[in-house]
Length: 132
Image (cartoon, rainbow, N blue to C red; front, side):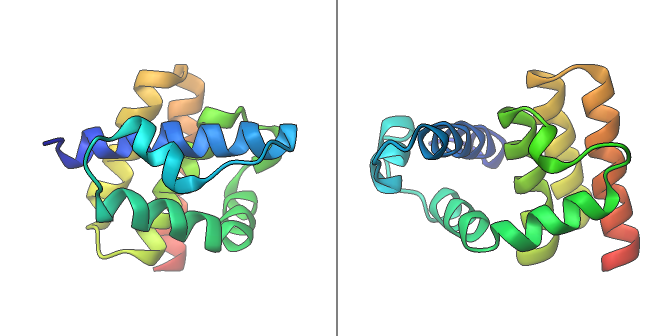
């Protein structure tokens, strides 16, 4: 059984794949993408992925509002996925804000460089303080 941090890692990978497939106009099933990453069905993973897809425009709008000199579309696909998950957890779930922000930062430390870590931290921090 995976813990929440490991599940967030799965969410990032699936969001990344969805992004790639959509850009390439490849047909895919979200259920299948999740199954490739997880043997056991998981409501947290499925709920976050479906929620992020459903609220994609609002999440992107919020990210762009607080990104300085950047747009969500200019970030690489992994950073987009991490930021989307962080914003989704802050705005649409009952995950404690400090946990949502810390988890996003840990993921960005794993997959991105220090500039991106700071940028993601800054955006989530602003959303936390100004949107909550």
